[in-house]
Image (tube, rainbow, N blue to C red):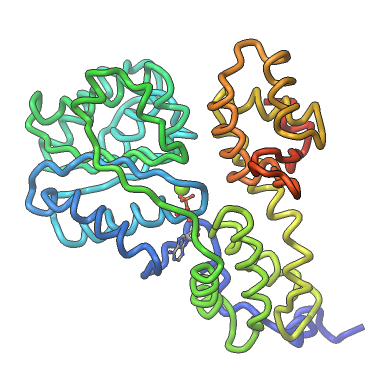
Length: 372
Ligand SMILES: Nc1ncnc2c1ncn2[C@@H]1O[C@H](COP(=O)(O)OP(=O)(O)O)[C@@H](O)[C@H]1O
Ligand SMILES: [Mg+2]
């Protein structure tokens, strides 16, 4: 027996210098390879720095491409620069109704509202009165807005926000963030025209870009020399394969670091990374399922029912088995989206002239897909 259990632990190798740098909420103080997107955000929000109404913004692109981080970064800078502007990022996956978002806004800006029995209009009025009293210019970020904005409730909420300038003289900024480039297409026409946002697209990172991002983050998170460069390479390659998803890589660094520490290893090696990919991917891919539209979910279920068919046959199954199937062009668009999201594997088959026939397989768990 060691003389003291805690004294014994101290002998283990400590690899992490600051583990929190790899937590999802950590906001880095620079975002490499997002210079253009940050510039565009700043340009749209610039009027707010002078107390005027900024342009509305629609930020879209695949998961893990730095959308939330970039928006948080710019809003923070704006707040530091201007005493009037105050931003808030609402995760609409959690607050997924007009009422829930208005309640969040009211409370976050310091209105006191009772928990129960307050209607949406009243909550809105409370929020407005705080903004007026404190002369705040609010920047409302509707993050993960997919589900909220696909219903009427979402259009109503936007309508509330967009009317603030003329109705109450509040120069609100609205930033909508989504994975879906077409999200705004289904909005109410009136809302669409008064929103008319600046569109900023975030594309997946290349493996080369991911390498740089991960090395910078690893330097902050681990003691010098702990993460061998092959580990960064393999994590970058892996995240690249999942559509250039930075989140997967950062989560893998954290998980692999923990495995290595537990093994009392002296360095973070490729084998530690490989050991965690399965679990990290599983969690991150399954999260993506929640954002699919009904039509995409129906297609994914068809894929789940028919393993390893070619895309032509898949279309036939899709047409006969789905209640209101979409036309072939949309089918192809959706299939390629599912493949970009890493949910299905749609490999080109060799020797195909048009390059259109692909063997399609489900990547995520069949049970999860059936429950959609
Ligand atoms: N350019 C970048 N530089 C450093 N870290 C980044 C960059 N882009 C994304 N990240 C990190 O990757 C993770 C996912 O980014 P996030 O903004 O949440 O993606 P999205 O909102 O597009 O899904 C976060 O931990 C974020 O800090
Ligand atoms: Mg996000």
